[in-house]
Length: 415
Image: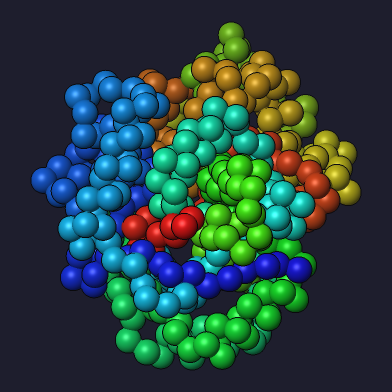
């Protein structure tokens, strides 16, 4: 069962939300954050990327940078740029992209559920990234940014959310840059809050869609605080961390594509010939070709697009990892033909989120930066849940969720 609870969110006043809200800390670098926050002292980047308040080049992991985050978080509260709700609430957070809206419930998830595996993951985490976010949670004593969960959809939860969104939203704005809509409601009614809690208790598992490092960091800090508190009761706020939970039938995973710097000393003809061992290949011409089904790939090379379809017998439909297109392409193209063994460390490969479109793949090959591009058909939510349920881990750079959660709409304090 999924244990959740409402919380007293810390939020910007309605008239300031667009100044405070930001993109997540891990989708842009320090200089991009510095540029976006320029002239705006209320930007959440001053808390989630506080290195922007120091000279360019300052190490974002320096102790003074973490301390600056605390100083700025305190200042935001003292200035009234962030204000805590008087009562515990759930919240509805909706996002609109390309005319399609998905509706999530903002809740506090239970640390024990993460530690026991009831909150399921599909990616490995890196200890250095975990430790960075753990420090940020520790020093601020807060989950400044939410994690992104999926749950098996329930009709009654859908109906509750549909009733809430008939009211005027607390926040409703289009984010600069991406043009996505962000809409936010509070849930104050005690009976509704109690029913949401009950309905989640009937859900066997929650699934991390995006934010594996933030989830791990939040849960590990909560666990630390338990061990350090001789009077621990289990009711403390640090036993929970903030998540936005979306029903699985509203989420789409978009493609996550690859570009490679060379052909491993092969000519174009030799490269295509080697691929023909495992793929049916069709040269489609200069027009962008997008994969149209599982096990169909798009290749861009020397001004031409190709359709590649994996031959029968080159993958195992009964293996939840082996059947993934990212596994097929990694084994049969990147490893076997191009000699790329480790997607995490090889400098010859880079990854491009599908939100940028296949035109970005073409651009990076045409300008000479890369030699070849490979586009994949996106993973489905069904595949993701199957992998998480079977205790498997997806290969690196498999899923890309869009739109990203906007940070700064609500914060969860651990005290």
